[in-house]
Image (cartoon, rainbow, N blue to C red; front, top):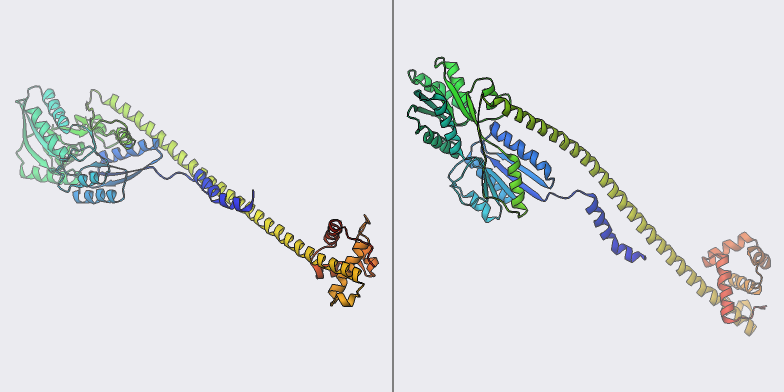
Length: 473
């Protein structure tokens, strides 16, 4: 392979090395903006992150809106401008007055709505529970456990503009309408923030000291437990029962509260982050998917709390194992990536060294060829002069006009007269010319820029090709 061909192939070789040695860029970027900032949102994020371990070509760009609709709109618009491949959103508001989903659809970015409903047709798919059903399950549980006993209910609501608060309140009322003994005596809260609920609850109790209620029905476990805190701090209202929605694991989750007897029951609000990621994968890869995906739920009380908590502990252990394995994989991948980079650099350096060697070798060969050609022309000139001198019987002074020419004349004559000697060497030639071998070699190098062997070889070729008579004077 000549130098030019190798130089043409060099960019392809370098590209091949880089493509095979460097890890691929992420194929999918999934943006997410979730409305809440509580334990339920943290659990959903944790599940989505863990599910993404299965898809190393997916990158998660995660944001929390903190129940701030303006902030969430800015987050979604930022994702649209960044051209993410898909957006997951838990809307902080029910009415889509900002039209941000419409802007996402115009940008051909699919949107998955999770957790909460939104008044917009521009989403790609929904996955979550039926909040009205959660409210109905809470109301039915109270009705079934009270068995006809007159029961006053204090409802603790979340944000009035969020679909979970709207739908759970509607479901609760729909359920207790079937039980004449159940009555909602008041609704307080108006926020998902636990501290705010406790503060508002304490103020409500101070302003309504004679209000009697038997049940606190929280639209989330945090709502119920925050009101319990307000009751404990103000005193009174003994024997009140508490029920909530979410059923989260953990030391402060609803399941533990049921286990400790601080809540009578909780309605599971499923997160299902793994199903969210699977749905996103199907949408991105053009596979079939359901547009509306309603998740199943259940009520947990003292009758089934042990079974549910055992299942949650098993899931938690499996997740921790996945996290450890993923961290190990990341560690090994980083080491492997560095090794790949080192190998790539070594290959590039090797290729450059090979190309450099071939290039300089070719330059050296061409240089030697040019020197030989030049020496050959000069020697042929001197040999032609030798022949002319022999034919015309001219003196050296008439033919040569310099010491250099005279030296070359004597050298060529000596070589040609001894050309048939198979052992012709520097000693023989120097002796014939009456000089030392050192003088011979140094003068040849200075005058002709060639070696004695090259001169003998060129002279032999000249004699053979032209059938020159070698018995010169």
